[in-house]
Length: 182
Image (tube, rainbow, N blue to C red; front, side, top):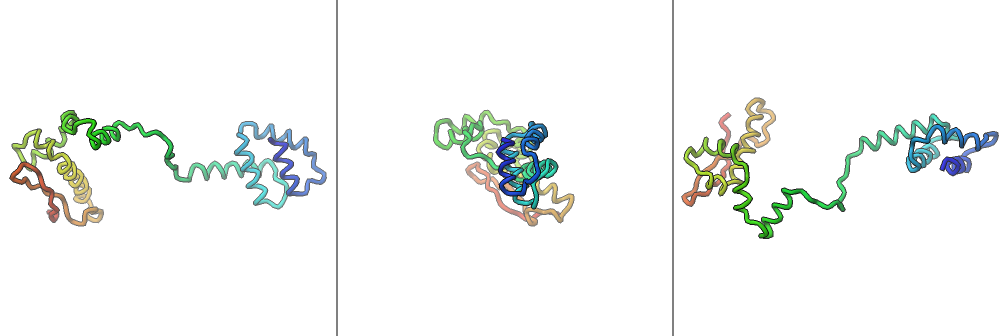
């Protein structure tokens, strides 16, 4: 690979008086720990940016620059990966009717939600909590946002509003937006 890269450099720059075989041996010793693709990219970068035959130090600088670029660019999710997330699968099974939503909710841990809901409705049953799971979940998120807002009002995300729960006659909770009490 080094011989090919040196030929490429020699075709782009004046190599008069350089011993290309010796240079090839030096490059192989210096860059044996790097893979061929990285070396080729670094040499191409050197060819495009330098005005003379690249030295070992130039190529090492190019490798450092490529490594920095690789580390600093955002990572992209691959689309061809099989998604096996258990929560995703449970949601898909519930949406398609393969599993019963009541089964899933009966196994859900609602201890924090129970504490939260008892503040608003002291005699609420676990069955009613599960029946109104999304509403209480939204309220808990709103409460977490408002806690940060109480310590520093300038970071208010909800623009001065928070979720209030109102129980309907049929046992379902309705969420309403109400002005904060700050």
